[in-house]
Amino acid sequence: DTYLNPNYSFDNFIEGDCNRLARSAGFAVAQRPGLTSFNPLMMYGGVGLGKTHLVQAIGNYIMNHFDNKMVLYVSSEKFTNQFINSIKNNTLQEFTDFYMKVDVLAIDDVQFLSGKEKTQDTFFHIFNHLHQLGKQIIMTSDRPPRELQGLQDRLLSRFKWGLTADLQTPDFETRIAIIQKKIQSEGISIDYDVIEYIAHSVNSNVRELEGVIVSLMAQASLTRREIDVELAKNTLRNIVMNEHKEVTIDTIQEIVADYFQVSIADLKSKSRKKEVVYPRQLAMFLAKEYTDLPLKSIGYHFGGRDHSTVIHSIQSVNLLMDETPDVEETLQKLRSYFK
Ligand code: ADP
Ligand code: MG
Image (tube, rainbow, N blue to C red; front, side, top):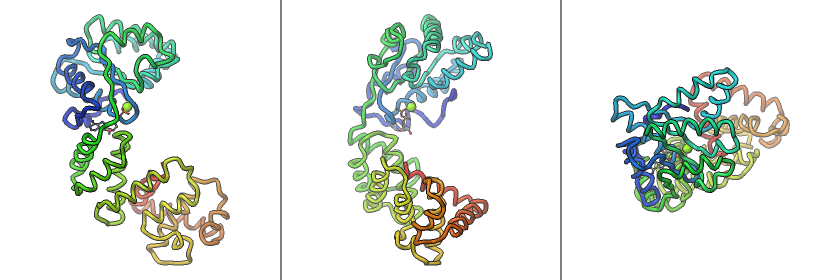
């Protein structure tokens, strides 16, 4: 992506010990692009810790506070692809000209440039050009510069000209604040004991924290239950349970059953009750999608049905999908539990 997402701002970035240096350096750069000693500004940290959010917040802030500054945000993958295409199409000059005329260049996840010598050469020239003109350069990486194997030394040494700041895993208080902010932005309210429970249980990164909240809300609305600690426990158990698992027919049945609050025995039963038929059909549909099992064997796992029943179920789901958009949405939610 080469475009800023206006949803990322400093206002909705929660500050904590884990990100204070990066945030304040970022804010300084946003207020005086190219004029601080933080040039380049290099922010690094693991996945889901807010690198993209911060770098885009800087870009958005500059866009909103300066009329005449051209800000360009680009992922390193996109940069690489554009570069390769420009070689193919004989438009390398246009490519470099384009990048050399920006006032602020934000380039995300520079670890992707690793091993791409030609791309690095071109980035090196763009970097030098912009830096000499006092233009602001902001970069992110999933690791500190010294661990960026496959990047040219001349680039790495330039990365150290400015400021390098890390983003760490959020501490408990920051996690609480992030959850509160997130549910507030969703317009819902959750009891503090649930928030505390989630903050205790999920301590890896912010993206995962957000994922849990989204799943929790989906679970609550689908089962028409209130969000309480019990539901949070269920949701987390599902997520953890399915994290590193390949998707088997058993997993599918477990997840679908749990989602619709029916039993696995119900799914395998002969029951024609509406509350059971629909989940059963979705489960068969997903079994076809996720496993390599022949239809006959899928039928076998659903109480010894034959393959024509499975075909019929899949067709029913397809028909339903044409009629109501909810079905696709439900499938999406279910699929999200498989990851
Ligand atoms: P990264 O680029 O480091 O992998 P992202 O910037 O994509 O991580 O962040 C993942 C998600 O977490 C995003 O939705 C982002 O808005 C959110 N997030 C990360 N850090 C914070 C924070 N300090 N305050 C609020 N939201 C955050
Ligand atoms: Mg990112």
